[in-house]
Length: 180
Image 1 (spheres, rainbow, N blue to C red):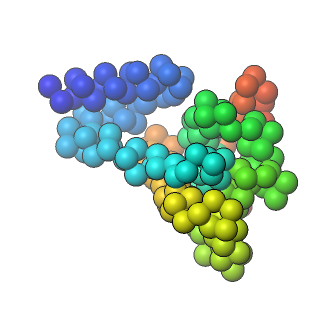
Image 2: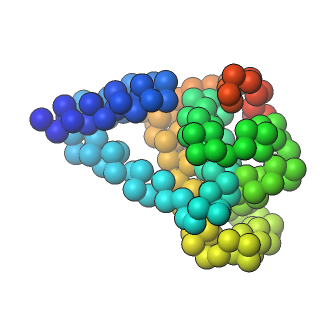
C-alpha cells in the first residue's frame, strides 16, 4: 500500500516538473522503506529560510546541484527557482560561469561552491549572507549547499546519472558551463 502512495506522489511530481522519476520508482520497487526515506528528503533540502533570502537559497541549491550534476537535476532546480520567481537572468549568469554578476542568486551559488570546496572565500560569503539576511539565511544556504548534491549522487550511484546538457529557462536555452 505504501508503494502505491509513494508512486502516486512521484507521478504528480513528474507531471508538475516534466521530470523523469524512474530512479525514484527504482528505489521504491527495491525497498518501500528506502522509498519512504527518499520521500522525506525534501524536509531537509527544501528549508528555504527567510523570504527575503529566497534568491540566496535558490543560488545555493543551484551551485550545489550543478557541482553534482549539470543535467536533469539542474533543470529541475531552475524550474523550481523560476516557479518561486527567482530572476532568470541571475540563474543564467550562474550557469554560464559568471556568478559574481548574478546578484543574490550568485551570492548563494558562490557560497555553496565555496562550502563544497572548503575555500577561504566561504567566510566572507557567510558573513555577507548573515549581515544582509540573518543567521536563518546562512542555515538555509548551508542546507542547500549540502543537499543539492544528494540527488545527482544518488542517481549516479543507482545507474540513472545523466551527462551535461543545456537548461531551459522560460523558453530560453542556457548552455551550462560544465563543472571542472
